[in-house]
Image: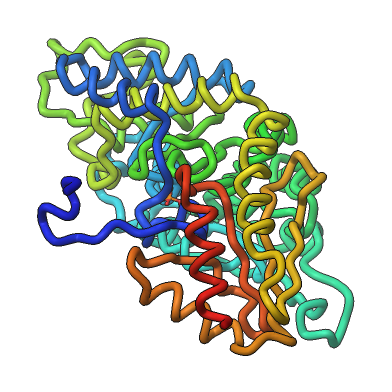
Length: 397
Ligand SMILES: *Cc1c(COP(=O)(O)O)cnc(C)c1O
């Protein structure tokens, strides 16, 4: 009996990928060990964050970095940093943004429910553009000049959600924003792989970029990191760290927090609810090291092997077509695609049968209306692929 079963919680087979609702993925031994070892010592958390900042900076090409409880937490911190700068009074007042720049510009087609994090900081989202390409009624989306048009003296930041389909291109957004002195925050939570994206948005000029630690990176589920400009990372850190200290006894690490620039010590800030412990920070750093050491080619081959095991196990099931999406694209994640048009049961039936089995199998249902089932190999353990194939066969015979 494992420790979950001991409290009556069944473990599942996660064929959906590292989703929060399915508890993320399977941690590498070295990441789990880093967390376990970290738990046996005490450190000054600001000093640890400063060390993490240097490592994240080296890995991403940014000036500095910071670890919090997820990409979403990092977006809250990033927004707060852009609203307050280094003013401790403003930090104390958030989410009440009276008197501060509180407008965050966002392309309408990029709106999503993770932007709750931006609004939580106290900002108002100003939407730009009408993406009529999505309605099939037109071909365009927001353009850089429309972002420029929306900038006012109350603009705190432009918020950009990175994705292959995101428009306009980040470099154009950065150009118009910087011309008006406005920082650009990028949500890159799920933009790994490819590994090159760790550097890409920074090199395209973004001021702050948020990545999830618990997705493809393979870090703790409750971790994420920011990378970007040093003064903004400092403003984020100041709104996240515990400040139950006295000014004259306060000796923060200079790389992270330069006391000279502060008129006083802020109180606990709006980011206090986004705590990351030493275990998460050390786990995230171990995951970042393992991720960059492995590289896209070996990682893709590892995932492809599991995907092929599932696909081969499904061969010969009457009425289904099997293929692997992104089997050749080492910058993507190979996904098994099962098409059920000629099968005995439809996708929803099979998804539900898998979910109700023992152990429960969770696949990706997002294409069920096209009668397709997607299987993501990222979170599979040894033996899972054959078990999944067997369960699919059973649900279709
Ligand atoms: C997953 C995701 C997030 C949240 O990441 P967490 O690390 O779980 O907080 C934010 N934005 C996007 C686009 C995501 O896909």
